[in-house]
Length: 402
Image 1 (cartoon, rainbow, N blue to C red):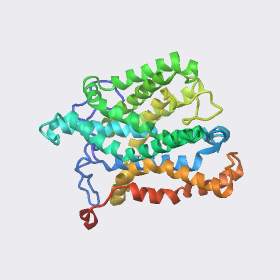
Image 2 (cartoon, helix red, strand yellow):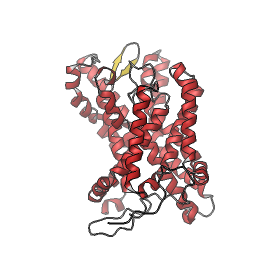
Image 3 (cartoon, rainbow, N blue to C red):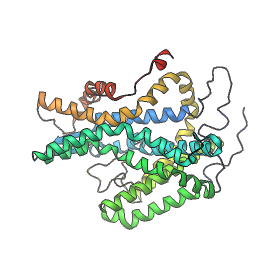
Image 4 (spheres, rainbow, N blue to C red):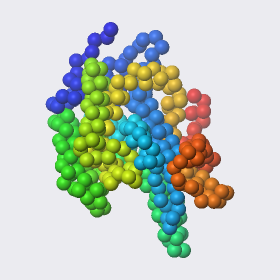
């Protein structure tokens, strides 16, 4: 049995190690028969987690979004009227995972850059880090934003404000990208804080989130105005992102700490839902007076802790899958931004087709609605496939030869 690495667990506040690698410490050089080490600079487990989380997001939007048109779009989901479905959201709400693994990847990339791996000698490594990620993240979304802007201006010109609201609703999931870009910009500062203060940074950040919840978010049921809402979005998700800086240390620690971290996160969720005044569901639903996500509150941080521990607990199983499906994993990574950016337009197009062919969609959540879920899960593919093919990454002759 391999001895556990002597790295302080991520659950003990203190000074962080000088380098938090992108890949699991002690595993990249594993040369056991049949074991494929991760590609340089890539962590296949993290790639798998991001790809799986994206599949969950798309499937949830397509299958569980109920939309009716009543002087504009009205959106809901089945969580509030389906007994016990709130518990499923603790496992299917994957937005914290995106920010968590984003923080882990940013920590590794910045550490490598400052260790001498910066792509150029003429620009500071922090600037190179930020600009390279902005190019990769902003470019794919510009066509959709341009299309949405043209369509919204056209609808507004003919007085169809309901259509404008529908277009805004279609691009609403891009909030994630907007917040993520802010966190990319401040990631070098987050790294310096991580190296200086370690786990105290997310711990104190979570305390600030809790104070904001008690003083502002909960008393107003989340109706705090535009600018405070934007500030709370950045604050809460930055805490989750900062937790990701500690993922490498937790992966290197004895696995007991992963179980402790997961148990602590789920316990905190249960306490928050039962005595903390927070909804139990991790998606917004009509019976709840507030949403845990809009604006995000302390329950999001608790869920991130639970997911962080669970990821490490499941890592051996995830790594075995990665070793067997390395090529598929690379393909999923290449197409992830395309799928994320365009999947809601595919849903909107399919919804429009159903309305044209069959009339208004019945949003009543009953047995008939559940029976139609396979149709709504597969139907948007009619538009998604050509959209993805048109906007996705282009393979070069060199790629085809591989």
